Structures are given as C-alpha cells and as structure tokens.
Image 1 (cartoon, one colour):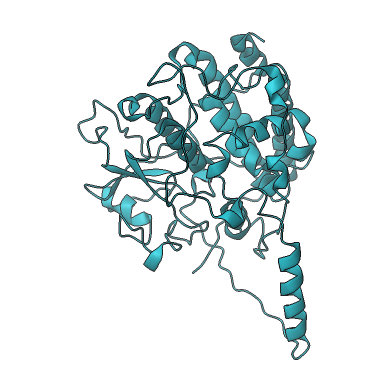
Image 2 (cartoon, rainbow, N blue to C red):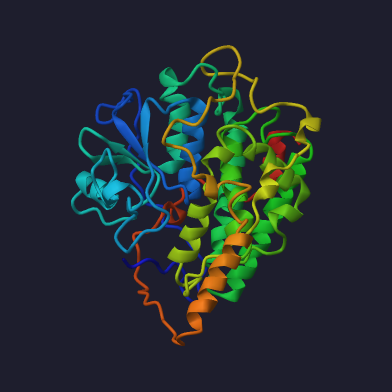
Length: 406
C-alpha cells in the first residue's frame, strides 16, 4: 500500500479545495430524508473535521439513529480504507475503500474522497460530505431523534454571533494550522504563522472572561475550536511548524481545552494514535521518512483545569429535548477509543521503548545493513483536511468582538 500525498506547492501559499457534495439530509428532502437507521457516518478519528461529527453525534445521542464506521488512520492514493476492520471491510457497507461509496453516488466522481461522509445504506452511496453543514443539521434536522437532555448546540438566539465566531475560528485557526504546515514558501509561512497566533491570542482573551465561547454552556463553536486544540501539541506544533508556543504554554487555552476534554462527548472521541499516525505518515512532502513521534505525554489532559471559577457548566443549559441539558451516558459499545490511544496512556512509552530498543540493538550486533523504505509521492484524493466550507472568510476580530459584545 502506498501511503502519502503532496499537499504543498513550492513558492505558493496553501489554498483549500472547497468542493464537496452539498446535498443535505433534511426533514423535507425527497432524496435523502431524515430517517433513523438509514445512514452510516464514516468518520476517521484522525481528521479534525470528522472529529466534529463524532462529538456532536455523541452529545446529541444520535448513536441509535446514525451508525458509525471508522476507517484506519491512513489512506493510500485512492481512498481512506477500512484496514482495521475484520477482513479489511466496513462491517455494514461491506467495502474496503470509502471511494466505493463515492463512486456509487457518481461513477465519474473525481473530487476528494473525504471524511466525514454520510452514506445512504439503501443505495450504498454518499449522501453528503459537507462537514460544515452536517453537524448543524444533526442539531436541527435530527432533533426528533435526540436523546432526552441533549444540549442545544446551535441555539436560535445565538446563531448570528455564533456564525461570525465560527467563521473566524475556521479561517484563522482551523485552517490556519494548515496554512502554516502546507506553506510552499517562507513568505507564505510567515504570514500564516502571524495570522494563526494572532487569532489564538484573540480567542484566549475572550476565554479569560467566559468559560465557553458563547457563555456559560457548550455550543457548536466549542466543538469547532476543540478539534484543533486537541491536535495542537501532538501534530501542529512540530509537524506544521506552529511553534511560537505549545498549547500547554498558553494558560487560558490549555485550561479551556482540558475543561472540554474532560467533558463527556469530547475527550472520549479522541484517539491520539490515529491522529499522529495519520499526519506523520500521510504528509510525505512534510515528513518524507514517515517517522511518527512517540510523544507528547498526554497525561496532562486529565489534570485539573480550574475553569469552574468562571461559573457556568457544560450542561444544565437549554435542551433540545427536556427542560435542561444533561451529560451523555457511556460511550456506545464498540465505539470506545482503545485504551492505549487515550490521554494518560498515549505518549507514555518509556518502558516499551527501552525494551524494543534493547531488542533492536541485540539484532543489530549480528548484521549491519540499511533499509530504505520506498515511498511514492502521489497525489491522493485527500482527507477532509483539504476541504473547508466557502462561508469561512471572516478575519475581522474587531467586528467579531462587537457582535459578541466583549
């Protein structure tokens, strides 16, 4: 299997491919109506855009309405693959390549084979891969199937300021780390770097005053910011050269991120093994030798955050079903992140490293040779790290502050 892709163009800045399937699964759709049991969410744990759907689906309690398929952390030049499922196929769709679901939609499909993708089980075809709209529709179109106590992640009275803030987070932070990592020139990297850390400082200033981005309770905006922050030290700081500071060196954002991580529905969707394996093995133009770091130590994610002092609580606010929102129950059987990939376990490899290094040294005493791992720099159809919604164009932090009344 060939792993890898080319994401940078020498001398150029990074620009996302914003083409995706814009069909919506909605209550009034004749092609893809909301219907429990009809769709399967394909969401790679490695991908920050897919991670959003995992969090929102769990917070809203849609596990029984929308089934879940998890491809492995890497992909070849054709597609994300279900290489970690028994027999190398998704147990429900019966396919090895996610590409097959896209070709079932359109035999001539030539755009990105991206995650997340919502697949129609009746036809085996992708209904939509519009990740930006997908989670909003989970909150609004799928409301009849929310669990009792599901939080209102997209409150009608907050949508205007929320949309503005989420556009800012998209362009300056979610996409900002990619502009740094895939910059094709020093000049474009410099610009991207300054934009990113300016935005992080702005958001940090906002979060000094409130526990969550929109106030006292979690919303969709927090989901958007979290999936970048949780990958920051593991991937973006080193791999993407976003190295002015680590997340752990930004006190407000680090405490905020830990607060969310320790909230049911957030941290229990995070797989650090998938995250690091994906970025360091797939981006060959950034990391041609595909060496995957053993760190960082993730135990800090479980340390006290102290954000309770700001008031508020993740749940207890308005609910889509019931009077007040409550925390989701345990992770659905079969959807748990493996223990070794969780915070507090991933990154603690000292004993294992000592054993494997000793064994390797022993083998090396009998023979000396070098091996070069063959790689092929082929253009992949890409992950949803290559896709972003065209609405996300706002850079004006002053305007955002005005909308949020801060």
